[in-house]
Image (tube, rainbow, N blue to C red):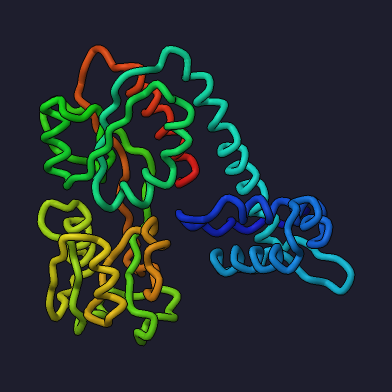
Length: 307
């Protein structure tokens, strides 16, 4: 009887899809040389990218034998998942193309500061290019302000952490994003695989100011872990928190999506597993504009890559 494949490790939220494309090419050709030729990249560069993927996943994907390479059990388990993600990404332009006809007019989108630079902005060009007749307006604001602007009709849709409270709102969850502990690279726990927050009780906790939903989620995680930090510092901007962490001023709990901005910091999974729910809100109406409908379809398709 064939042995059961192990469960593939979860893919990092900010994983470059090109790494999965490289992985699938090596798996398909059973050769780094042939895969490099097929992809049009240098073999050392391909090997380096595969190593980067293995480090991100925390497990080897290939057995490097003397004359051939073979997938490890985890590589075999990951392969169908990687192929499915690449198929989803390839299908996105076709989905947008099918919606394009007749989609024109204003679209006013808001997002919280921990979503706009990490989720919306990096993925926005495909929507803009697919719907050139949509006049897109963007606003960044805290959760209470976004709710108010949706209720007042200033915004058509807002991307934030759900659930939220408010009259007349339609709310939908897109995906769940892990939260991790961020520490300086020279921190004693920087190389830990997981960390119990109670080990950080002598540290200063860095949080966003009131009105940011990530602040509430951070404090909830700490409350559930029954940990009290030595002090607390509030910042206006998420970028300031990373700068303070790098300087050794404190630690923070951050979304996985922010990893590209965490140079000089280490993001460590929590033993007290924590995540935030990412979704969108809009005003409850009988009629939804075509630009809003197209954007919701775009968000739901894009969210599949983050699950």
